[in-house]
Amino acid sequence: MKLNTLRSTYTDGLEFFGKLSPYELAAKYGTPLYIYNEKILRERCRDLLALSDHPGFAVNYSVKANANLALLRIIRSEGLIADSMSPGEVYIAMQAGFSADQILYVCNNVSGEEMRYPLERGILVSVDSLRQLEELGKVNRGGKAVVRFNPGIGAGHHKKVITAGAETKFGIGAGDIPEMQDILARYEMKLAGVNQHIGSLFLDPQGYLDAVDVLLDLARAFLPDLELIDFGGGFGIPYQKYAGQARLDLTGMAREFDARIKAFSRETGYRGRFLIEPGRYISAECGLLLGAVHNTKNNGNIRFVGTDLGFNTLMRPVLYGSFHDIEIYREGAGPDNNLMPQTLVGNICESGDILAKDRELPEMQVGDLVAALDAGAYGYVMSSSYNQRLRPAEVLIDEKGDDILIRRRETLEDLLHLTPINI
Ligand SMILES: *Cc1c(COP(=O)(O)O)cnc(C)c1O
Image (cartoon, rainbow, N blue to C red; front, side, top):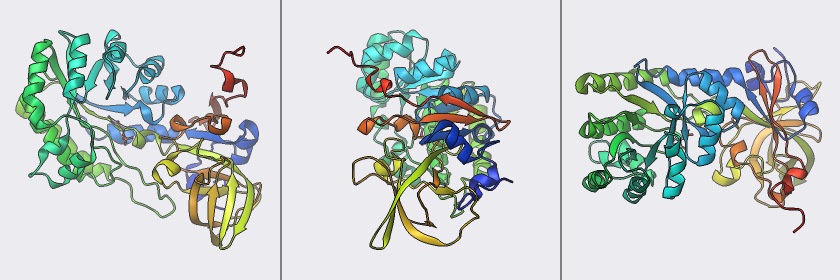
């Protein structure tokens, strides 16, 4: 096992960087750099495919978590389908090879005009309010509709689902069903699918399973037209890698989930698809963001470590206060267990540009490389060119351990790509 040192046991154990070291990758591609490991991505796909062997079961990857074409092709090759929420996500999913029946369009607050984009390509559209169902009717008379429900309708019987229901601002409630039927009838549309998304990163499956029960109960009312029942995403990952945070118990969950959908099929004769809609679980752990330390400075008790990982490259810590574990690589050095509180900041001119606050880490110095782990979901897709910094490159470590550039770094010219020069 190759040691990348100071603090690297997690990626060392996975041989995350393949044949090259993080120093060699940084020298070859520069930093900041997103690096993805194909083997881990495939494992995460298979973890979720193992939730059920029911022939109608499918894993509907939420493209918004990471839309890199190379990753989408890998995900597709594992047999997943694609959940898209904008014309851009449909476009990229189709470029990755997903066919119309392998894409679901889940939208909220969009124009009827926008809905034409998936409809013209034969893709099912899911709406999440009565007013949006009406818009869909206007552009899809005589067609199919998918409706997103709020599982809060399980009230009373399922305490945990109430929490889930209250947390999600999307979907229509049980009280809206008669009016939904009127709208469907008015536009001669068929209800082809029902879906939900309980919203949050869960590490205890019980709330999700309760919501599965609620949606299955509701689905009974819409048989036999129904072709698709989609239970949503939210499958969590342990971000606290070095604290040994436990993984979601997918084996236990599989037993419960599989039993529920098989019982439903048996009791109702339903022959359509059962979908789950994970984003983060599939792509977060295969990716990390590699950066360099350019400055250190002590302010009272706190040691600030200045890096090139501004929030233009990884927004989650600033946007949600999210935790990403940090690794530190220093060529030739041994592991260091002398810890001190340090705060990692980026190079954006905002005092809030903090990647990791008050972390107990080995003392960092200029020239070290650092990595923010679990950055494969909601990482690059949320990056920007704020401060006119260039979006990072993305590299894939394939199953043989070879590195492949899957998106080049932006250039200065890219910053003026959309601006006519002679204005
Ligand atoms: C974001 C989103 C997902 C994926 O959520 P994760 O927490 O990444 O699993 C699934 N479905 C819908 C409708 C979403 O908006």
